[in-house]
Each structure stands twice: as structure tokens, then as C-alpha cells.
Length: 79
Image (tube, rainbow, N blue to C red):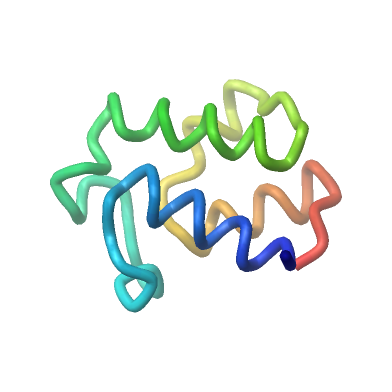
């Protein structure tokens, strides 16, 4: 499975949304992406990509696209 597919699967499973809703998705734009949902999302991203995210990155991850940028730039995940 590609890293994009893994990333998409994490978002879809954690936030209980379909893949067609990912583009442009932002924090609190869906009911499931609240503070608790955010921590679940971070936890699963860390597990799937075998990383430990920095607190600043956890706070900065406020959209689907920003998450990809953070993982690529700070954790060397290739998308």
C-alpha cells in the first residue's frame, strides 16, 4: 500500500468519513475532527508511519493537506 493510501485510510478510519471528503478537509470541519478525534488521528499516524510527532507539529496539523506537508518535510514520509 502506498503512503498516500495509508494516509488516506488513517483519515477515513479515524474521522469516519469517505475518501471523497478528504480534499480541503480542515480541523473541526467535520464533527468527528474535534480535539479527541485529533489525538486519535495523531496516534494512528504515528503508529502507521512509525514516527513520534513533535508537539508543534501536532498543533500545526490542521488540515488534510498540512498533515501531508508536515509528514513529508519533518518525518521524511514520501508521498
